[in-house]
Length: 132
Length: 342
Image (cartoon, rainbow over all chains, first blue to last red; front, side, top):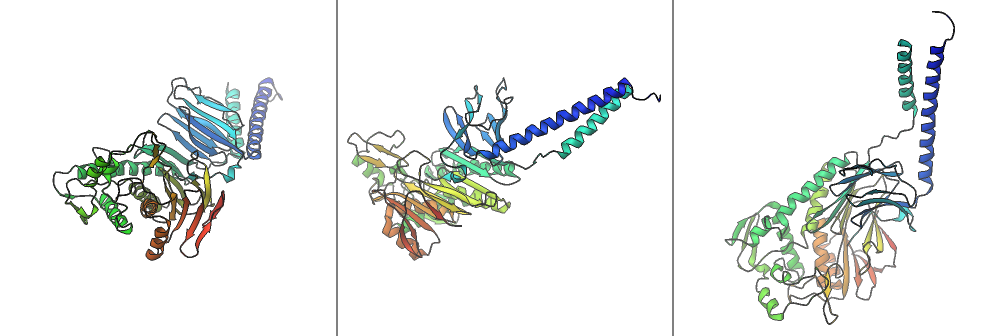
């Protein structure tokens, strides 16, 4: 079978090259994602349910947040996304993770909104809890 | 065909290798949740590898203790004590500890605080923000049941010799519960946690090696607006204030929920808010109410006499805020000031 490089060999090489390129591109984008998240520390994730704010979170601390019995949100690597929800259409779960001011993810059936807001107070200065 | 197959395998191998070289930071996330118990919100955040599991355990504790300490829940142990068939009942450790604290608070406050205030507090409705004070004779009649001296506690045996007397643990239960949650988390070696149990904040460990920041609510403003922030590693910050629950009647008179057990009416000691910062959640919770009832001078004297290791923040009716440290005395607090206890 020693006939030099043949079409099937070329095909194999092309497939591997394309796959490698795709994976590198993916990681390159991922790294850009990371540095974007680090640049703007004043953004916060605001979670509302039925129109009421149920929580406000910095994006720099990885966290899993339960919202009522119906939704779970996760903050990971500077982004927030809907980890799970019990709604029928699951569009919130399929939404792209958010991290820029103004971006939001909505679970309409459960009236849950995740949104990124910029605060005047730097994230490090927000209290962890307030007495009342 | 076998060429394609080996190509696939090489691809898979390449994929796995490249992924291994990637920068995925597999760090266990912390966990946080907010649920409703004791007619209020309970928010807990845990900073630890076992966060989710510990979080569930904390809420199980809330669940269990609600069935013991809630005066409103008809299935609770306290409800059974208050609607008792005979004067003597055997009660659980949890209930006994809370009653003991309540009786001590009564003594500290010379009777301004009384654990059996329930017959009177039930007459007042602070839920709608509007209303009117109960009639004087209604209050007088209910005051007949306000009688802590009728409560005798001997370990797990409680005897209440006044048939009208009913116990309210509103000022004590939240502190007891957050204290139990903290004890549990400490036992488990939890690395960090913040508990906000109906406004009582309790902290443990640290948040990624840094202390916690706890805000003290500014009275009569939006929730979350603060007069000062406390930097704290481990301890509790608990406030009581007139702004928490009140109504304004048709004559524009404000009635708040901290009732004097001597009069049956809201207390008037010149204070809008008292915050107690210390280590013992149940004690700090109870004292935050007691000190609203006794006023500032008496509160400071009690802390000194009893050698309590705690600091107090008072906000008076004119909006002046002071920090009291038993060692160094009073110091004015400017708005936005940071009280560093680390």
